[in-house]
Amino acid sequence: MNKFIVVLVLLIMLSGCSWTKDLVVKTEPVDRIPLVLPEVDIYYHRNIEWRIITRANAEQVFNKLQKDGMPVVLIGLAGRDYELMSLNVADQQLLIKQLNAIINAYKTYYIAVEKRDATLKVTVPE
Image (cartoon, rainbow, N blue to C red; front, top):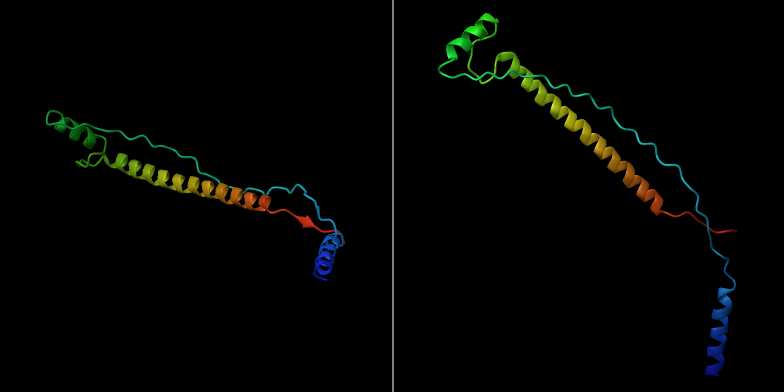
């Protein structure tokens, strides 16, 4: 009797596989997500005129600054040049932020594409 039950269970298991439908996998190419990048400003570097002041030429440099209508101060840079250097640094920081935004857009775009491509569309015929 045990042999009969075992044979019957095996026959049911083998025939059970013949009752399922075939699985059909269809893959279709999917258009890429359009990549939208922010515009980047053009960086314009402003030239700075450096003046070297020594004890020997201090009077001459101060007289020239006064003659040119510039403030006569000792800050390492002449007034306008110091302002231009500050503007250059600000422009560089802005450019770096914009380029970082582009890098992040590329990362987001390609991560989304990889996730999308990793999923397969599986369809079962009815």
